[in-house]
Length: 190
Image (cartoon, rainbow, N blue to C red):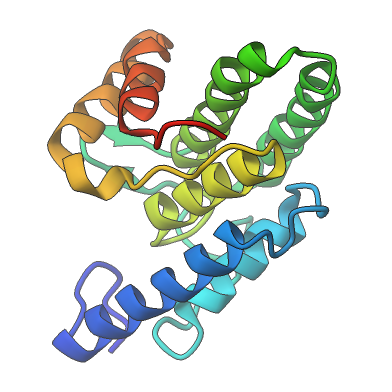
């Protein structure tokens, strides 16, 4: 079955199990030293969707995938611009991570969380894949949090509030409600 947003019971179960395995590996520090880039993004998507969707690990680009993807009330970046926009996000992430290395412990929690949430929201906004962008973007946030010694956040527990905060960001560019949600759900300590 390759209907993009239609999953069989077995496919849903498989995706849930894979997401759990990948998340646990990231929590344990797997790939901690690897910066987030297009190859890591594709690798996470491939691990999640291999054998479930034919586009596993393949981002949208000219001649591959939909020109635009509609998600909720929003439209993705055009397929011809996906790589360029992701490259910009990864360059900005690298710059911000260097600055974060100079933060004191208290600053790392807020700024590290803000950085992880920003990457998460940027990847969802671009929507590089036909499907699975939310899952993969949350894996990206987990990766960033772990890279900076912070504990990952289980955002799935408050899906409605999460969706509202993300939609708020898409409309206003205000990341604060999403950052507040992450901080509120974040386990105490580093």
